[in-house]
Image 1 (cartoon, rainbow, N blue to C red):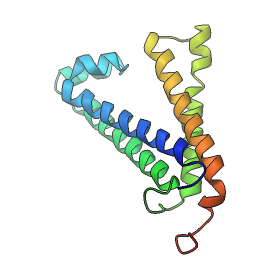
Image 2: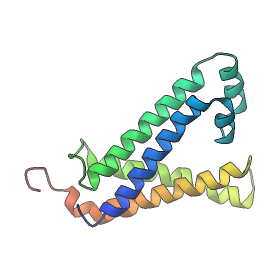
Image 3: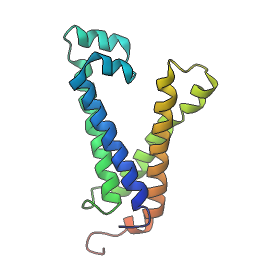
Image 4: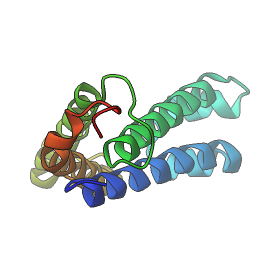
Length: 149
């Protein structure tokens, strides 16, 4: 464990929860996809038997699960993953950039499509902050190779 562990563990748990919610959309169907903001044309296609939305959702869930693994690795819970520092900085940056959509969502131009845009952006911004602070606080320990730890 390191100084950033709590932040990274929180980010990892939230990323894993997001991955599971994506999989729940597949399990519970179109109403869940709608609630969580999937584009309507993809939902209609899904309702007509196309698998594109399912495969996209599985891919997103897999990416989120990998991001959780990187958070847990940075926290010292999992073994050190390849390119750990680069991965954590990249993940934090992606979450923060996506979370930045909160600003136009709050001023309502060109957003929001609906309230989902506001709260999803706020959640993703919180994830980005957790990864960024955790990575920053853990940075000295992330330089260590497994042999040095």
